[in-house]
Image 1 (cartoon, rainbow, N blue to C red):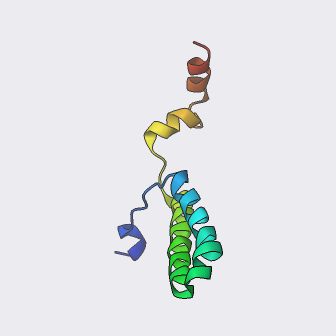
Image 2: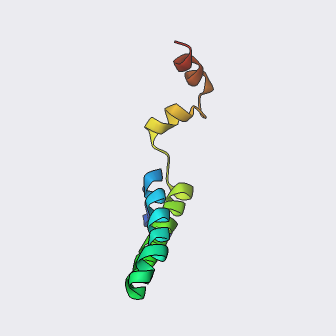
Length: 84
């Protein structure tokens, strides 16, 4: 059994990505002036969060609930829902 078969990717929200970007910028601008060790550590954590959100975006399976809103697989559903 290969390693990739045991990994299950969870879909993460866009708020998670936004928090990682804002946290990284605040760590660099504000925390780095106060303490270089804390600034570097927090920036590293937020970079890891950002990488996790990119992996989630590219590898996670879409949730069925969201597939109905996208209507990629059945375009007639979107037409019926918007024309009620």
